[in-house]
Image 1 (cartoon, rainbow, N blue to C red):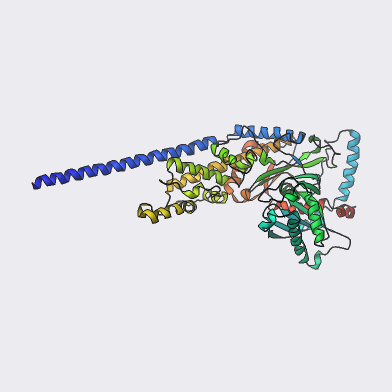
Image 2 (image 1 turned 60 degrees about the horizontal axis):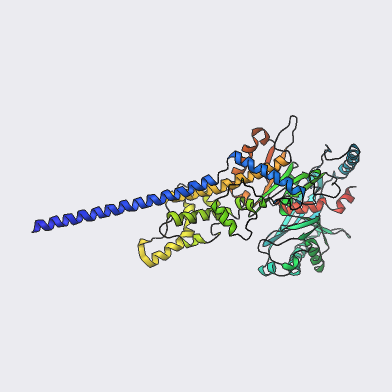
Length: 547
């Protein structure tokens, strides 16, 4: 009897062991299938985001075609190619083109040559004096005071203050917004010392950086087309923003003249030009993205006025709206675009700018969680929240060099912990507080790399397109022309892997010889400084004093 009991116990134990082993095997097979599915999603993403040199050159060529179309007529292209009315860039250097290639006849060349010589004599002092800038580009604005010392003095002094705009003013009235801005401007000036007092009869001069869509009609006037970035002030649409600011300054008793109205990219170009005489292109890579460059006035068919004396004009491309069949779009890009506030618009910007890179990574992780149980049996609810994974988070994870990727673990825990904490409370230790495996964290970093690499290489292709348009993508025998590209924006400044990849890709696209003539420089805070410098270069006092 005892022997039968022992045999039975052994049999039961054997069966239980077999069942347990089968369960372990089954679980491992299930996990292997899930992991294989997750890797399949990553591989597909990598393939769809591919940016081989051939494709990038196709993107650049398509950019050139759209640039020509946008310069030919209003509405001729997705690229607006807006005329900035900035034809005289401020520099600490003499800015002239003595080739006169843009002149239409020998007689015209002689006339302009004489004018240039006279201008050269008058401009030896360059920009000098006290100028101000107002930089309005979002929920904050900055007021700057810039003191210029002329040819030898350069930038003597620069001070600024930053002010937040109350949310109610972003949806209020035009008068309320501009009165608030003018009051802060007046407050800034009231705190100045005696050394900043101007002679009697001389107005303070202001450069106004206004980074919203404007139809510009001169260097110091432009009507608001529409608000963006959370602003919605209906009675301001269609009004001249310079006139509105001027009226507000008068109500504050502020004797100040707006000498230049620019957007942030044009301001960056001007600011960069002051430091680097060979600046011809400016690119902003931040929350959004845009580019501006110096174009030959004769290459702008939609320009119907007299040719500017310099023969050149700064063009605000609004390149974020560029679109081409050569852009490597994925299902995640299409879904994000369809759910955005502006579907079908700003496609290029949605691939390369800081507003969207982290969101693309989130969407891929969500699919992996839903279809491959990448984070376990439960899909983290927070992962379903649009823009919960910001590009600064993505950048931090991408730059994590620790052996166990501890920063990636922390960022992922911020998203996942809430889910597993609730499950732990409800169901106990079976659902411990979430700790991702090192293998999982490595995949997250790889996804960050895929999305950032695509964005930076496409931005580089856009830069190549501009260089091709202005003939700076080749080197002719005996030509020692240098080209500086002024870059600004938080994405370029703070996302090191992104900016490094961009610069390397520009070199790869241009080749070693041409790359030696191209320099990419960070023009920090260029838009505000550039506005003040443009106010200086368009000052009526400057020309009178110099001549």
